[in-house]
Image (cartoon, rainbow, N blue to C red; front, side, top):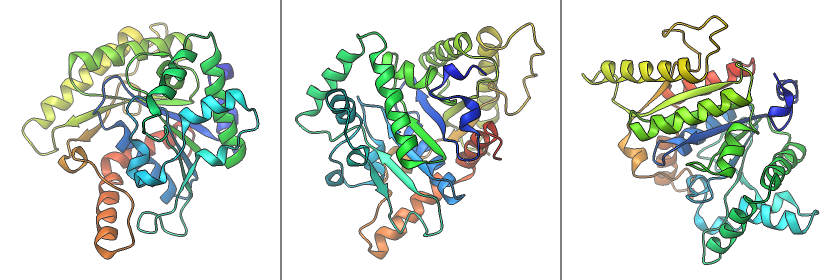
Length: 321
């Protein structure tokens, strides 16, 4: 691997006390990217890993409101990037929330931290415009995000940093997906727009990384197993993913894996459609029995089989499965 491709070398990430950076990306919104990240974070924490969740989807923030009431969110990525450019002595902990809800995490689990995009209020659009302006200054945004990730690593010493990436094509998404992480999970459904977006990202990753850079495709909102539509939909999705990887990712000078080869980039994991998730969820409680049970029920969904497969595959990337 070329260590310069990621925020710090892969070898450092997989060392005993190393921090691994994994980005979750979808070209279109509504693909289950944020909820999957939350599920993976919860499963890693249950397995004793310390996890930092970073919301860089600044145009449509939502990760923080899964875990906290809106009143708890005061600062975030937008504020840090603006203020860190002015004052080099900003305190990262002022922008970070500690997930400690007793209904969500047991006492013997790993720790969960979350850095929101920011507080969505009357000042948010003004802050967003200032960040978008940074996109036009060569190298500035990458350096800012790189400094943020290093700040997180140095202050929190977590095992994983999971980045919720900004959807669509733009500098921030490109940096957090194709430049900084040690692995990427790409979300999409079986639509032309979604495949076009996945194709461009895979092509960009192939151009900038060696062919062992970890990438996973996640098929979103697929039919439930056992339904008549499941098998044909699954086979069509795999065929599409395989075709894209043959054309844009796999090196024809090397042995190319077969279409049924699991754990390869073309072999997707599937997230069945879930109406409960579609209508939103809150992973925090006021301590009442009713709300505790609700949080437990949501957590059961997000730590189910589909999310477990994605979590285990990510761990395999770093020799932890």
